[in-house]
Amino acid sequence: MDILQSVKDYYGNVLKSNKDLKTTACCTSDSIPAYLKEILPEIAHEVTSKFYGCGSPIPLVLDGMRVLDVGCGTGRDVYLAARLVGEGGFVSGIDMTEEQIGVAKKHIREHTKRFGYPKENVQFIHDYIETLPKHFSGESLDLVMSNCVINLVKDKEGVVNQIYKILKFGGEFYFSDIYADRRVPEELRENPVLYGECLGGALYYKDFERIARKAGFIDPRIISKEVVDITNDKIKDLIGNITFYSITYRLWKLRGMEDGCEDYGRIATYLGTVPEAPHRFVLDNTHLFEKNRPERVCGNTARMLMDTRFKDIFRVTGSFDEHFGLFEGCGTTAYFSQNNGSNGSCC
Image (cartoon, rainbow, N blue to C red; front, top):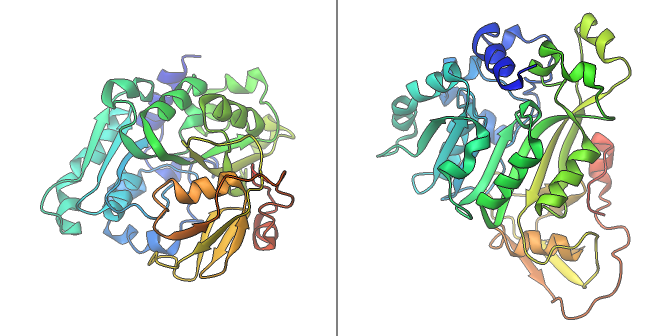
């Protein structure tokens, strides 16, 4: 099967809107946070109705950031991010499907006017995501995001490596995708419908985390993890006992990261200065910070708060001068285990 041609045909010709999907894998929006739902009415109907995604890969604290959406489709997430980065930021989107990128480009002027910006702060590139180095120089972006696209790529390891290279140190790859609880058999990977529905190309999630660490994203963190509801009986029969998940990850490009949670006596306090999160701030599914409540954190978590765009919204005390051994019980906040039952990569 020619994967690129199959995906282009499925999203360019077979599907006319997200209502044509046979599963919910490529189009789950229930978890979109309130601050993004408030912006959605400002996005053109054609953009939202023809958009496919499996999560909400747009993090907080984006003012003035340079952002890239990999596999942007009709540009829904690009426009949402454009609202969050403000006039001083810039958002790019890249997609190989001409029909979808055409919809995205058509609405640039409209959204610029709706947002009240004096000039455009988005661009759309019609190209394969494997060509990222052609469009973006090394260490040039603050954030790369993606919504249910990496599973559609044949050379997943190559794309993750490219994303790592174009991110600045302190930058983040924040994205949602579909993963399996085991390795998907080859015969299912070759099924064009399963591939187009974001199931055939889904990685075993542990294999993905191995790829991420190899690229340099040493400590992958899970934000959310939800079982994909397969409602089509024929597809249920095809996949058998495989369980698929929509998982949102955040991967940091940081110096000094370690392959485990180590204790240096660091203390982190969330200052409560993010308007969309006045009372609590979620770093990942095992780290919830209440405003003004000091929390002991491992060395990796300390770096995620000190050496990134979060440095002004947290106060982190202590140093790396003295090591106290393994950080036992790091990130065991019960709030998250009750909500989704999944464990973060760290801790």
